[in-house]
Length: 209
Length: 227
Image 1 (cartoon, each protein chain N blue to C red):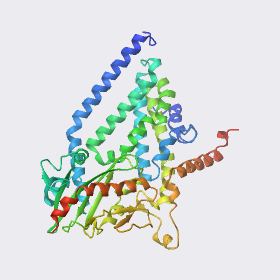
Image 2 (tube, helix red, strand yellow):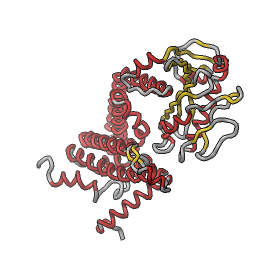
Image 3 (tube, each protein chain N blue to C red):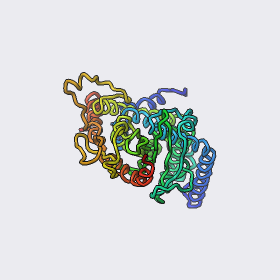
Image 4 (cartoon, chains in turn blue, cyan):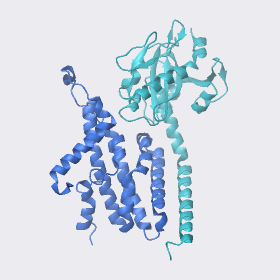
C-alpha cells in the first residue's frame, strides 16, 4: 500500500467537500462563528486546528490498542488539552505575536467538536498515517469554510481584507456603507447557511428528503 | 490483558495523568525565561506605543532605555513609594492604591506615562496613557486586551481608536473629568470625548471606566506635578 493510495487520498480529500466537517457533519460551528469576523484570525485558527487535530489523531491512533474503553473520551481530552497547552507554551516562548493572536482560541481549539469527532470516529479505528491524513483533511476542510466566511464578513463588514482597505474610498464618497451586521455573529450563521445551500444545490446526492 | 478491568483502567489513568503532568511542568519550566523576556519586551513596546514610538520586539529594550528616564510608583496621595514600577503586577499594585509612573523624554519634552487597568466584555483590559508636561493634554495612548471579540471589541488595539485621544484634555477648569468614550455620533457634556467601537459597546464602556478609574488614582500626583 503506497503512502497515498486511493483510500488514503479519499481520506485526505473528502473532508474538503463531500464530507466537510462544518457544512456536512455540522461540527465546529461555534468557533466558525466566533473567529470569522476578520480574515486573519480565521486563518490562524484554521492552521492551529489543522495542526492539533492531525497530531492528536496520530497520538490517539498509536494508543488505540491500549486505551481502556470506559475512559476513552477522557484520554482523548487529556491528549488534546496537553497538546494544545504545549503548543501554546512553545509559541509564547518563540512566536509571541502569534500566541497573542491565538490566546482567545486556545480554549476554543480544545472544545472544538471536530477534534473529538475525528478522534472518536477515525483515530480509534485506523492506523497513524491514515489518521494523520484524516486530521489534515478535516482541518483543511474546516479552514476552508472559515476562510470563506471570514473573507465575506471582513470584506462586507469592514471593507478590508487582512486589515488592508480594499473597497476604494470613492465608493464611500458615493454613499456606500459598510454593513455593520456582517461583523456580528448572526451573519456568520447566515453566511454558513448560504454556503451549505450552494453546496447542496451543486451536490444533489447530499440533499435530505 | 483485559482492557475493561477496573485495575487496568485506574492504572492507565494514573500513568497518563503523571506523564502529562511531568511533560507540562517540564515544558513550562524550560520555556519560562524565554516567555518572561517576550512579556517584558511586549510591555516595553506597549509603553513606547503610548508615546507614539513603534519598536520591534528586538529593539524595544534599547529604545525603552533611551527614552524612559525614570520609573517609580506613586500612591493615591501623589507620594512616591518603594517598589519596581516596571516589574510590578499592576492588578495587585492598583488594588493597593499604588500606581506606576514612567517619565519619558521625547524631543526634549517631558511626558508622563501612566498605566491603566480595567475590564472589558470577556476579560481584562489594560493600557498606557501619556500626558504632556502640562499633565492635562493627552500625548498618546495604547490599549490591550486579553480576550475581546476580534473585529468588535478587539478593535481598541487599533491605532484608529487610540489616536483619537491625542490632544484631548483630562482636566476641565482644574477638575478631573477623564475622557469619555461614547457611541459614535453621540457627545459628552462638559468633558472631552472620543468615538467608541460600533458593535463593541461593552468594551468601549470598559475603556471609558478604565480611564476614569485608573487616572483617578493619579489625580493628586498629576496636580502636584503641574508647573
